[in-house]
Image (cartoon, rainbow, N blue to C red; front, top):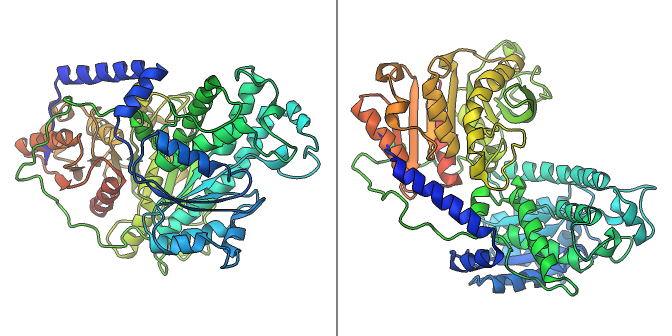
Length: 589
């Protein structure tokens, strides 16, 4: 149990470095030089499957890997079938099927597929099951492409490539949105089924629509018509689209920016390459399902900052408070009741717009929960009036309302724990802690720091009232908890300890530098002692460890009861998943 002291000089230095680095990165030549100094990712073993909107990608990605200086990369193989659904690759006869034996060998790290317009695709499901069986760490990437003939089906299909010049960008985007939403639903189902985030999506279709928008607006030099980007009415890619798709795939595979690298592409100028690289990276890094977090995006072309971190000293009481979770703790189980996860909207008076949040309701909630299936084994018709405690769970600076689901799948953890009688059935609310009209994690995410502070009012004035009006909740402090990871951990400590009349339990996991100083967090030690649970956790490989460690120390000197849980992990998903696993077993007790 311990806490950190941050002096103004250190904070000022970090802010200055962030500004300096951001300024330098605006210059392409400087960006390239810094990229050469940055730590490169380890090489990956990659297998490609796909159709004609995808199979030009492998040779270009191979070239980008070499240009990036990535060591240990291996092209395991590729399998192309024109106009194919993924299931056709699965059903390919054994003599010709290269994909199945590659996955069965367990020697593939990344397996790429290209989605057909018919979704869900059973092939994606089957390849995921086979691949994860032989390599649990496998990442499966599904490229979402642009629509053949520009539209899903019907009379609107073009018959001449020149007809593309009359296409409206908003119509193209609507079609791609619909396709992508179906892909996201299948990815969610598979990740839920496997108890981990293993299936990711590459938003190539979105990038292509954005490129067409640049052409229409006259902002892509050298191309004046949309039809110049394609070779036929079907939509086979010209060199600019091929290069763009390759940059998107490279970014998703290695989770680093392609900026400063140049893929093969006859007739693509250096200026066009630079625009395509930027477009690809912005599209992929801002898309949650790509697996490229904003934290990775921010560090992708930036060297490690040396000499600015507080040295980590592990003290005698910096030890685990709990044993490691048993194997399979985060895997969905059959034969037990399951809760429900839904995305809802609420009116935010604080921000002046509608905002989204993920909400988990536990097994047995009831049919009054919108969309709840009364045939679900967890439905309890005799318990229709029961009210539940609520955990408000906050994300980090690079996340949004979907981050916890991607990192930890709280519903799976709680379904299992509730079934075992180890957790109190609860509602879990995962809002977006970036309280501004554009609340997406994009661009310089650090510039949105004020919006994370503004979220205090959004949480208290808008989020909680919306939840308590829509769901059957126990609406008192003892039955409200606030916890979060990284920036969300700092928010939870700052807001929770400032509103002890609202929250009875507070948790900070790997809390970030937005966390207030210990004395400011605890101006009245006796009041804080009234909390039912004050929970801190962090890993010793996390550069932010001194923040949580310092708060623990302060609480200890003030004789304030709390839980201090230390692991050997870093600032990452596994750390936050196990922290949540332990937190929900101890809250509302």
